[in-house]
Image 1 (tube, rainbow, N blue to C red):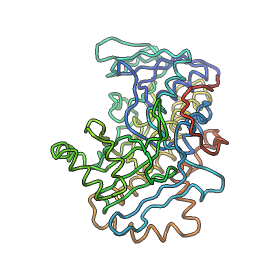
Image 2: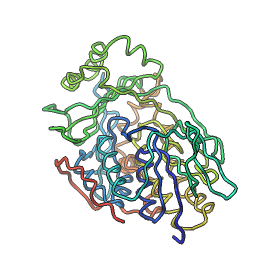
Image 3: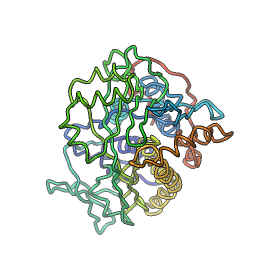
Image 4: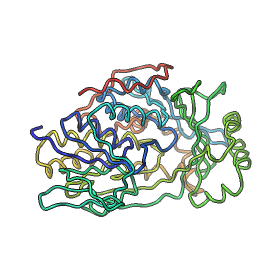
Length: 424
């Protein structure tokens, strides 16, 4: 790279924090801007796939996150009524050893945020950005809700999510379709339950009812491994769920999957549950004038393929690569969009195709799913393709970005979250 740029990054989520680390390490002057007075994680648990772990490994953070989380070797789901297998994806189908890592969102956030705090990265909190203004000198300034300006900067990186206030500045209009189904999430101790500590397990009734258990390891001072328990719920049914009460909901979950009873016993207050809504959202070109969109601000899908945080990490790395390729910002932004275009399109198309079979009101699609998926998954090569899809590796995005998968196998029960190892 022949030039250092002054860069503002909006949002302290996974995409924003990773971009801050990668861009500062490349020699840029980075300022993080966060709307909350104290940066904090949102959500319950997620799976770090081999694609996302490759970016974290480049930052020196993969090993401690693997130690904090729970190794995931399999995604497994049954029809709650018939007991038939409707989802069975194993990382072992791939040629080399690969796995996912179930992780508490707070653990991922704290690792990244601690690493950011150790670098000369300015952080401005309690600032809600409502617009960006381009100056005559080619630079851009941020306009806060309070009316004051921050900047100027050579480049603004929008990592503020699907409801970003800056989407109108993209080269082409955003395409956004809210999904009817969201999910309730809660973190609970796994205890002495019989759940597989190395699998995401789910149960379905048709496609309208889904309950899942994802082991997510330990976080902070938690004395034992945790799990993220989630339940599908239509967005317009949230108020009715609150009115009916917690006990009625717990009864319904337990009827669907009796083994969840000891997990449900740990939920005594509705405040332990958070609701997440989802949407298919795409920026055909994730760039604007002196502006790059990364993570959910550029693209989002349903969580069925578990790619959200992993795609955000790949975006952050792609932007750093593009800026390193050329000092010309317009050329770098075009390069960033090119580096991510096909991988994003592929996974958004896959999400649109698969989601209705597992989360929708359709009566026909789950019947097709239950009849077709089990024999199809046993065909030679199909098991590997499904594993590649879940691992985030279809289309070989790592080679395109010059990334290598971490040469790390196994799992440790150590709950260490040190943030050590960020290379400069």
